Structures are given as C-alpha cells and as structure tokens.
Image (cartoon, rainbow, N blue to C red; front, top):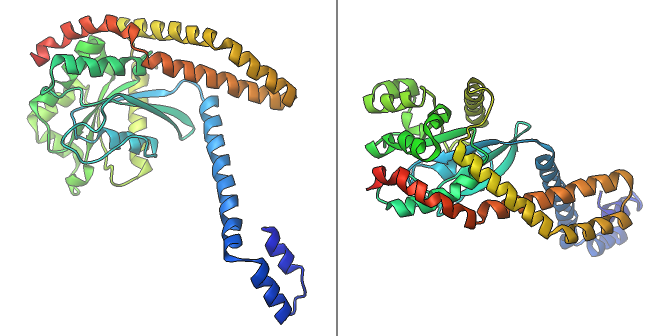
Length: 333
C-alpha cells in the first residue's frame, strides 16, 4: 500500500474539515498516479528479468526456419508463434524483412527460436541477390533447423512456390525435405471450409504437400489463438520424433557451425580480461548463492553476445557463396 494512503487511514475515522484539507493537500493526483505507476514498473521489470532468466535456464531451443515468398505472412507467423511482436509485419508489395532475423521466447516451458528469412524464393531476384540473403540465414539456422516451415498464403499457390522444396534441397541438401512442413496463412479465408478439403481440391497444391510428406497446418494470424500454435508445435514434435529426435544438419551446416564456434571462442578469448574484471567486481559485492547466480548470468551474457557476433560475422561466409551460386543458378537463370 502507498505510504500516503496509510498516513491518511491512520487519522481519526470521523470525517472533518481538517482531515479533508489534509487529504487534498497531501494526496495530489500526481502522487496517486505515482503510487500506481511505480509498482507497475517494478512488476514489469521483475517479469522481464524472469523471462531473461528463463531463457538462460532452458536448454537447446527448437529452431524454426520460416521460408516463403514476399508478402505471404512470414513475419506475422513468427510473431504468432512467439506470442510477441518481434518481427516487423505490415502490408507491403516488397519484402519488409530485408535481412534474416532470429528471436527467442519461452512457450509452454520450452525455448523456441524463430528465424525469419527475406523472400528467399522470389524468382524476380537475381541469383546473387538470393545468395546474399541466404548466406545470412544459414548461420542463424546452425547447427541446423528442426523444421523448414514453408509459409504459403491461402489462395496464392503458384509455380514459384512449388519450387520451394527443390530450392531448400539445393541449398541445404537432399534430405532436408524430411524436415519440411507447409504452413498456410490467412486461415480466416476458409470461412468454415475444412483445410483438408481445400488442399484436396487443388491438384498442384496436393502434389506440393506430398513433397512435404503430407505435413501442413493453417494459421489465422489475426486471431491470436494459442491453441493453433500448440497444434503446430505438436506436429513439429511428431516430425522431429519421426526423424530420430534430431534437428536437420548437413555437411554445409556442420562446417558453418564449426566456423561459428571457432569465431565465438576467439571473441571470448578477446574479451576474457574484461570478463575477469567483472567477476572480481562480483566477488567484492556478492557472496554464496547470490554470487553463483550472478556469475552464471555474466557467463551466459558473454556466451550469447559472442555467439551473435559470430553468427553475423561475414568473412567465413564468403566461402559459401560460390557453392550457393552453383546450386541455385538452375532456379534463377
């Protein structure tokens, strides 16, 4: 309870002119607002700290790589899955996501990592443009995605989208198709129609779904219904179990992961003196459990920052460009 309220309540219970004047003078509207806002901010900070602690404590995340053409709703889908507006999403004729982005969240007690890619399968782009975009998505996906989620807008299935699986195979390897699932957006357009009936009525779409081993789901990104996310995660879990419980990897992804790890260790070594200074500062300020908790948080911070820097560092990615151009040229030339 705000102290100003207590001060008033401790006065005589009988109303009087003196008490009324005291109330008016001592409890201003601004003070009342502060009494509401300050606790709210404190609670918000505590929740934020808890969410960060949750991310630190949860193990290896479920990695979801969103792919698809521009404007089909990949960014909105990422926000729906993570239940927060991490990705910029708006109606546009050009790609809103200009580069690959990755965000994390704890959903139902598990850590999810969603990687949003910029319209990788737009055949209006040159092969060089596609390669420049893909080479930034690969390190964010390393050591490998658990699912390639091909996002398709209901009613807009084209021959270009039919190539999606083949392009994924060209970039990530033939066996990647075992980890592909289709996600339809704009589920509200079904207007009560069954999604399975919708798929069966379109021969080209049905053929495409078969290349994804028949795996598909539908989202209504306007309706923030957590159940549709739970159902998607259930399908992904079943697919991962069917694939031996592992994420997809390939020689290329393993090579990229080794390069990322090597660069991360270099960065950690480079920053070791600064880390030790911060550890010494913690020793002088904290003891026992508080120190152990703060030390773990500090080490996680350095690990995470080094990983992010390593993922976005470009020098080691140059070696991928020639192989990507060779793999993709048949789709874009």
